[in-house]
Image 1 (cartoon, rainbow, N blue to C red):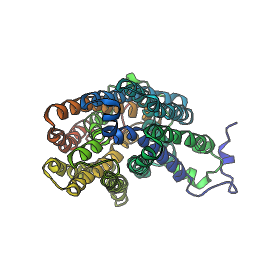
Image 2 (cartoon, rainbow, N blue to C red):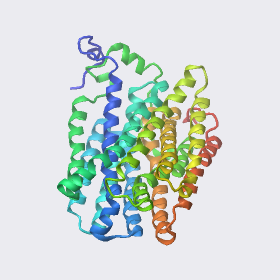
Image 3 (cartoon, one colour):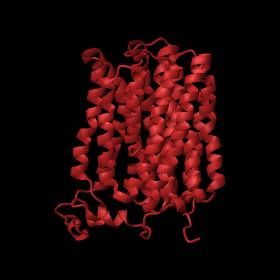
Amino acid sequence: MAQTASSVASPNRAIAGFRWYICLLLFFATVIAYVDRGVIAYLEKFLETTIGWNSIQYGYMTAAFQAAYAIGLVCAGRFTDVFGTRRGFAFAITLWSFAAMLPAAAHTAFAFGVALFILGLGEAANFPACIKTVAEWFPKRERALATGLFNSGSNVGTIVVPLVVPFLTYTFGWRAAFIVTGSFGLVWLLLWLWLYAKPEQHRWLSPAELALIESDREPKVASVPWRRLLPKRETWAFAIGKFMTDPIWWFYLFWLPRYLQGTFHLNLTQSEAPVVAIYVVSIAGSVGGGWIPAALLKRGRGLNFARKTAMLICALAVVPVVSAPYLHHLWLVVGVVGLAAAAHQGWSANIFTLPSDTFPKAAVASVVGIGGMLGAIGGVLMQLATGFVVHQTHSYLPLFIVAASAYLLALLVIQLLAPRLAPANFDA
């Protein structure tokens, strides 16, 4: 039976700062998601000869993940809004954990593509559920920081992959790498079911912390149907921003290990340090991107100024990545790509907060799902284009040009569609 708010308030049961424990759960879920999707990227060059595929086929495989991710984001966002975060997240991580193990039974590129498709369907729920949880558990002034903290799990996940996968591959075989990493999500599921409830129903939340969480709570709004969300300029500011910038992160995730291994002739163990270094640097961007608007808000600046100033700083920091193909020293490439990855994560912490800045909580996961779907569609196009560009030209320059310019163009679109970041008007 759900507990009442008064039972939540029992001082004997309260844990100080419990909302940050919830954020920690979201962080670990994001780590697991990025481990599960990162195994295939790290082993790609190894499996290219073991299984037998080329860059175009690999592009099709990663595009299958992205296509499923696009479908899953819309469904997951709506499912989470209607059925709640607890059940939605539990179902999704169960699905994606088993899907992450499926490549262990694959013998063809097609079978890998099927496994990645199912993985994409399950993992699509991670960000809508995380963003909705942040909206439920944090006041507005803390949401960008909380988002940046859980989103830093994407960096940690990509760091875990090169540290764990070579050991598993060389010790137990590459199939074991998929089985072991896929099982992480099932452990997380047990913790989630034990610890998660809504703030007003939670037995370990103090009255003071509940009051803080509810300090800027907007009036209760019933679940908002898509037909009312799609005409809103605020929906499209978020969605187009995701369409233009999400593909860049997916490019790094699925192609960066291959780029470094191929360009500098590295094996699995030799590529550990450069890949880890890039994503260690990117953690600072994720946390810093959430800290910048929080610091500006504390200094009395408005939400619109704080959010967009942070996004502009991140967009400018990406630009030097265009020089990567011209650099012939491994660690110079690591430096500019690491800066770009950090800037993307800072950007992501802020763009993910736009829906909770402009929509009621009942609509947040649905808006995140719509924007995430467009981001995944952009990712499909980027994966297919990358496969063909690399196969035909053996050059990554056009791809780094796109990466360098996407964020400034996206910020311009966001400014045109949502110049004030005012709450969406549902009265009209």
